[in-house]
Image (cartoon, rainbow, N blue to C red; front, side):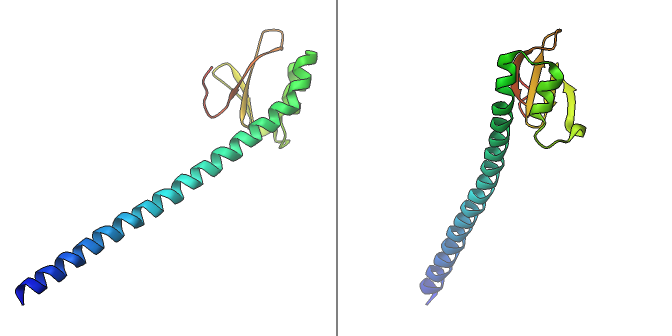
Length: 112
């Protein structure tokens, strides 16, 4: 009788551990998917901004024209300077002293 109780308790503990593992895996997959979704949206928005400003950069447009084109949301409150770049939405635009675009970076990176 005692061996049956030990066997049942061992199986119950194994079941709890197994279910806990699978619950963790499901939770982890959900969190990963949420972060992936946000990342894809950020990249999509940044690409839309780049597509809008690219023709202007080729033509040598002024800094204000490039910023206006990049401001898809038309929300000037979210335009600011950080680490030498003008951040507009999801991109950071680095201008030279004459207002011409030198480089474009991802705003969430901040890297040059």
